[in-house]
Length: 130
Image 1 (cartoon, rainbow, N blue to C red):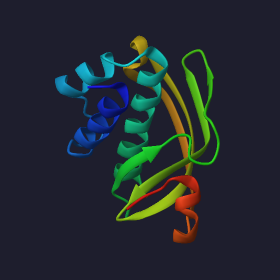
Image 2 (image 1 turned 180 degrees about the vertical axis):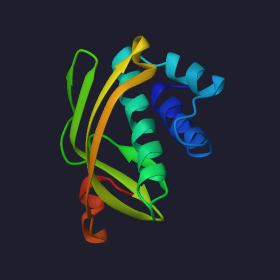
Image 3 (image 1 turned 135 degrees about the horizontal axis):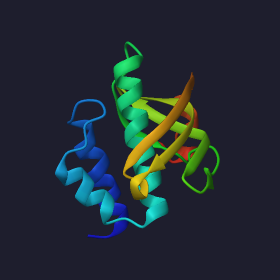
Image 4 (image 1 turned 120 degrees about the vertical axis):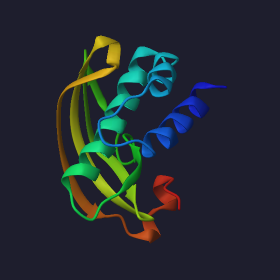
């Protein structure tokens, strides 16, 4: 299985677990990724968990950190000012800053801000999908 498929399977698996839970399967899949990919995927998981548990009406099933701009990385920090997440079939803009430890497996600090809904007419331009 290539790294892209691992990332897709990982996010699908995470959607089935309660917020902030990392079971052994998720940890194994994260460990199979390169450190920078692991950190980004772990932060995407954290974004879904936080939004689902803290923002009523949202049930995110996908986060893409690089939708509107590339994430910025600095050591254990990722800043994703151009992220997006999908909830109930709609896409929303998202900004987050995430600090990880334990080789990208644990989240030490996480801040986020949900933006506007992305109009469907913009989905194709940004490679968003149903």
